[in-house]
Image (cartoon, rainbow, N blue to C red; front, side, top):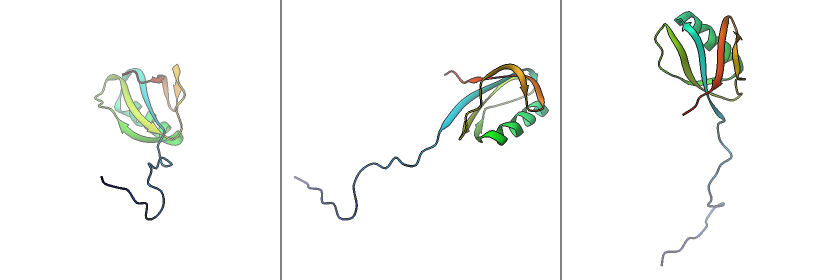
Length: 92
């Protein structure tokens, strides 16, 4: 039977490094590329953007994965320079 000998340190999983990810949906009726650019600029002031979902204007919603700080959910309010933006948790 094979044995295990500890030579240096502990042999265990290491979970001290991790990221806090948030999956968000940003919704605006008739969202344009300029609107998306403004939303991205505003999100970057709060958190790090890991990924942005597919977008082609005029589209009503875009999904983002952000890390670090969570973006507060809101319904149809001003988000940075863009009015009428709803922010919600992405349901999947």
